Length: 294
Image (cartoon, rainbow, N blue to C red; front, side, top):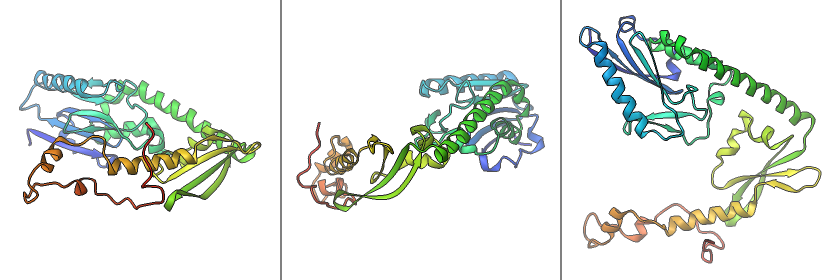
């Protein structure tokens, strides 16, 4: 039997439980929604005090390196330990564990826990993860927080039902989706209606609106007055021009790249300015005259 086993359990593989032989090993787990990082220690080769020392050192490093918005919490039962990213178990926005920096980080995709798990109940999802890694005993320690996640999920789902109904029965706003085409010409590509800012933007099916690419934007208009209450085509176009300008004239340069530019041009490490600012931006009308306003 092995002295130690390391394993990563992806959320897609929660039906593939750990082998029974590892159930009685000491266990240290780092929990995130998308994966659980686990290490199993054979009690024949290590005692609980040694495992606690490992856990204590891990906790110190993770706490030190993790952003203060996340309140790292450790749970323990019968030689099984599990780190969560927050006192509520799950922060809300999806987090991941950076194995190189050894800390929790918030992902930048604007995805959240409840949208990620969809129709799956929050407490059931969490418990299934614990079972998959052989740490079901820990569930009794975290059950109050898991059930609170479930209650929050149920409240949010009730809001979704209400918002969808209001969007259908009482449309007060019009959503216009635009594509900024060549030469910064906006083209309307989609229209829909809804009741409120929240009922339009915060429904799971509309979360894509918070992750639009640089050349796609939206306006919200009051149907009664045609007044724009959210968004600006002028600002969207200005932002595109700003990004293009800074790609062409970067305000901050990497010191290593600066040193490479000072080499002789026949040096294999030489970097020219043209190569440094090379990108796929297409020249458009007005680019030559543009400079950012700051």
